[in-house]
Image 1 (cartoon, one colour):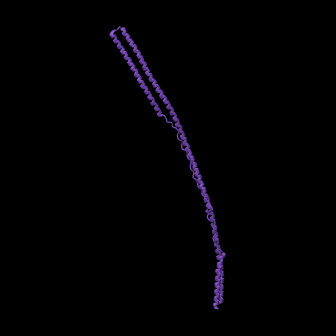
Image 2 (cartoon, rainbow, N blue to C red; image 1 turned 90 degrees about the vertical axis):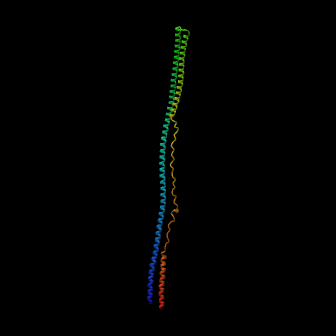
Length: 296
């Protein structure tokens, strides 16, 4: 019976040794697999870290290029707008200069016409005055001739009276009648001359008034001096934006580098398995010897 126990204990010890060896190998393999997984994770983390660094630098470079492109496009638009504004300014200045020249020419022409109109008015007034004065002179000359004729007629009448040989009161009355008629004719001639003088003065005054009215009408139609037309406003230069570029990437922007996780020791794992296996074998052997002692 004791031999059977010893054989059973031996078989159990051998089984435990074989199982412990397998468990030890499995524990070491598991530890090695865990370490391999940690190394692969560390490699992956390093790759991800490097790609993140590259992406951060690429994003920053893209933002710089994008900002530069926007600045160039705005500069092109500003130059185009400046060219358009300058073209419009030159066009407006050309129109203003043409209008200024036209107004100046119109003013010169108007001033020339005004001067000629005043000259024409003066000539017309002078001609009208001369005509009226000639008319008055003709009236006075005609009156002088009439006076001479009346005087001659009076002398002829007196000679006729003398020729008749009349004397006394009848002759005196006829002489008085003749003289009265002569005086009446002279008075009528004098009044005619005075009336003609008054009419001439009125006409001359009317001619002067007509000349003044014609001068005023010519002045009213005279163009005012256009002066200097205002020039178009010089266009301002199109304002440009101030662009802010992304700041330089610093080391802290990349964050901490990956670290390798805790590594498992295959030998320690195997030792732990062997320790528990030996403890189990010791218990089995001890139990077998205890059973044998009790049976003895």
